[in-house]
Structure formats: C-alpha cells, structure tokens
Image (tube, rainbow, N blue to C red; front, side, top):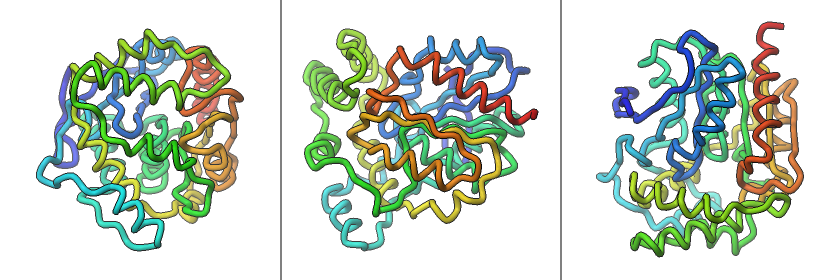
Length: 295
C-alpha cells in the first residue's frame, strides 16, 4: 500500500474505485487500523459512486509512530482530566484532523465527503469546522462532542478499554475478541471467528499498543466541541448504536443537536461496532447525505 507525506509525517493509505468519482475519506477510531474499514464495506461505497480513501492514523498501523513521546500513565491523566486539570499530550486530535487534510492535499483532492467512526468521528467533526472549505458532507458514527457532562462509559467498560494489551500473539487475539464481543451490542450476532481472524491480522500487520495509549491521551486533551459544531454548514449525518457501551448514545444525540440541520439515525441493538447487517442502511444513508450537496 502507498504512503503519503502529510503534516510532517508519513501516512499509510489505500483507495478503492475511480479517482474521478466523488471522494469519500474514511477515518477510523482509537487504536484501529485502516483495515477495520473492511474491503467489502469500501466496495459498497464504490458501488454508490464514491472514490474511497482509508488510512492509518498517526501512531497506529503503518503510519508514523511517536515513540519519542513516551507512554503516559493514562489512568493518572484520566483522573486529572476528571478533576478539570489541563492535559498536555504530545499531539492533539486537531493534529490528527490536519493529518487527514494533509492526505487530501497529497492526493490533490480539494474537497471530500468525510466519514469517521468513534475517535474518527471526533476527527471529522474537527475537520468540518477547522477546514470547512475542504468538506462536502460530514458523517460522524458512534462518536461524541467532547462535552465532559455527557454520560460516560460504565467503570467496567472504561477499565476494559484502559487495560494493557497482551503482548503474546494468541493472548492478544483472545483478549481483543473478548473486548469486541463486549462492545458489539446485543442486537446482532457477534461474528467471533471473523473477529479472531481480524485480530490476528491486526497483530501481524502492526502490533503497537503504545500508540493507542497516546491516542487516548490526545482525546483526553480535547476541548468541548459543542460551541464550534454550530458553525458547520455542510450536510451532516450522525449515526449511533442504541446499545453502545463505550460512547453512550447521548453523545450522538448531542452531536446531532449541535450541528444545524443534522440528521440523526439511531440503530437499535448496535453497540460500539459496525455489524455487517447494518452496512446497507449505513451506506445508503451516507450516500443520501452526500447527495444533498447537489440539491
């Protein structure tokens, strides 16, 4: 897969479809490699007339790592944030938004439809108000506004997220699959075999858990985006699982309420996941949202 120089780092990326079609930039979430945007899902977007770009965020996959920044005591940083103290990570979610725009620059794409999941939703929200001339439409999936007063994950879910990943390959596969099962939601059958295979692919492609810890650090350092979300003028779609244990559905509801004219879709039974059964609905909704640009 190719690499692009963007925002003073190297970004690993991949594309699907015809480059003359309408560009759709897919931004993945915390610690998630770009291959979490499954090829089958990407091709569904291609069938809707999109040119799909997926990429590894900084500190994950095959993009630039920030080893020199060290690994924080994330529980200490989280506790400090809960007490209202300022967090100073080595990079910010705003930097990650600039990475994504830098990738568009490298690909000579002036404007794109942008879609992000979880932390990726935070990133695309920031792109939309930080780089408004680069955005055609916005989709934020299973994400939130950064408002500290919103409901937070239950303590046991938070502990699971912050638990260090096992370094042994088989133990990593088992632990990763266990976490995915808990996050997945109750409304769809959990495809355990597929997730075991996916976890093995993640491990073999790039096992780098310290990058995820720094990404959490960056999230803890973000501001409440509600005041800036109101400036977004592009067609906006918010999708959230009604059964999300990691980012409670109130985060999606507030995101939609904060962006003028935003459409909100809550998928009952969906957790912090993208079950294949939901793909047709999600792809159709994103395509319909993109079509509003021309209307």
